[in-house]
Image 1 (cartoon, one colour):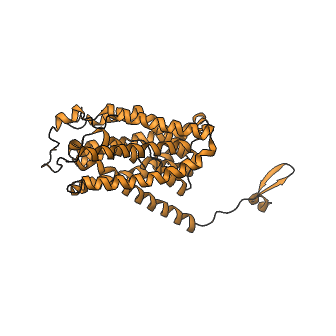
Image 2 (image 1 turned 90 degrees about the horizontal axis):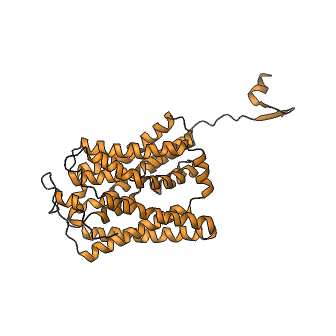
Image 3 (image 1 turned 60 degrees about the vertical axis):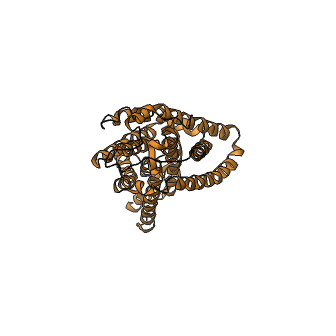
Amino acid sequence: MNVTEVYTGIDNIYPEGNFSGNESMGSLKTSTPLNVTINIITIVILFITMISLGCKMEISKIRMHFLKPKGVAIALLAQFGIMPLTAFSLAKSLQMEPMKTVTVLICGCCPGGSLSNIFSLAMKGDMNLSIVMTTCSSIAALGLMPLLLLIYCQGFTGLENAVPYIGIITALTYTLVPCAIGIAINHYKPNYTPFILKAGISILIISSIVVFALSAVVVKDTLWMILMPDVVAVAALMPLIGFMLGYIMSIICRLSPQCSRTIAMETGCQNIQLCFAILKVAFSPQVIGPMFLFPLIYITFQCAEALFLTLCFRCYQTFKPPAAETKIFHVVGVDIKQEEVKQL
């Protein structure tokens, strides 16, 4: 990927990197070496995230869920139905400026992120479904993400040709390669998986800190622009709506509470690493401005809300009345429940 590529469509709309709306979003001036460094580290973070996700996958689990695809199908529908529509509705209702709108739509159309696996575990969800869903949504995003962006951008004047589809498809393709490598390692060399996961987490934490620090240097004079009320409101509402509607949709489809909690986490948790990589690499600094930091604001609210929901669920589990135990008695090859014995 050419990290210095400037896409013609959006540059034609904003040739000077300025945006409508009383010019609240200005151009971002940064040195080319610093910008390239951030882009490279961003791609490294995305690569490590996806290879770690692949190492968690087992081909047998993928096969099992493809043979019984109801849970995965509902989860995909929630992921690519609820979140893009939520992003579109919030951007439309808040009358966001063009670059803010593009950023929010890209975030809303991203596949599920690996953080959903952690929160699904904390919520006592179906881990097999969670990992398979994250992988499947990453694969499906290759076609669905550009399509959804094309559809929803039609609802905003001037944005029909503003999205860098080639750059997004390229970034999505790059996510599939490390994911496939991870799956292959876990299948053929499973003894390497624990080491890769531990090393990946360490490198991921260090790289994320470096990117955050360099980004702070880049936007130190324009940081206030990203903390506008409409941007913060969208970052706070999007994951919460995703969690709630994902759970409601699963209950309506009569999935088990365990699967419903899993799909709720999968729906609200976006792949922030992918979103950040697309915004940072596919757009020039003069065009994207400080909005490339939107995923960091989103993930802050995403984690806070997911932790709050997990705390509520754990408290409910702790204080709810214990379910009456049902013991089974085997009488001459016939199973009789304890309640039936009492009636006798």
